[in-house]
Length: 185
Image (cartoon, rainbow, N blue to C red; front, side, top):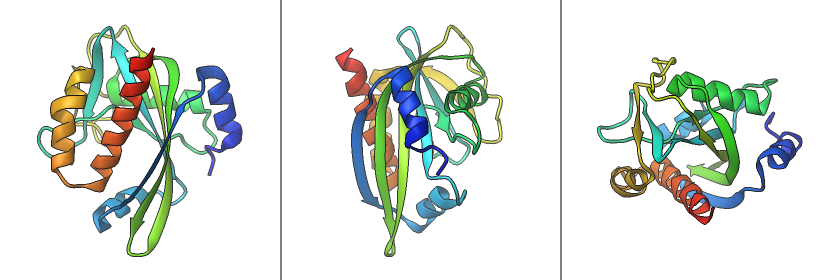
């Protein structure tokens, strides 16, 4: 795995110590397929991008109605971690961001039919002065918009949990841990 302890030590040095989150859950066959579609990748990065009190939210084309989440993606093999995070933000939101703090390091295990797939998510805060969100990667991102942390932790959280999908429960755990960490500031 190319996002290893050497890489993460530099991230912690630059952006601080994250809160650790352990998550373990059963996923469905289609969810497992989403997790393993890129055989060498076992991580993602999630961004809490703020413009003042506004929080950037994205919707992918396959998301059910009313489902939104914070942006993020993967760091490519050989890509600098920070450069990859900035690239993902630009592709998904169409704005430049400045990274703030390493909020959460989640270590997850997704289980299906006797298979256990380890996964890590790295959640960072960021800020932007960009006003208009306009995704550049329109194949992966259907739309982006400004919302609020309260919306993410309220109605969006309820919609995610109502789907019954494990990956949305995982996403809620990430959102909750990041929001709690931000609230401590």
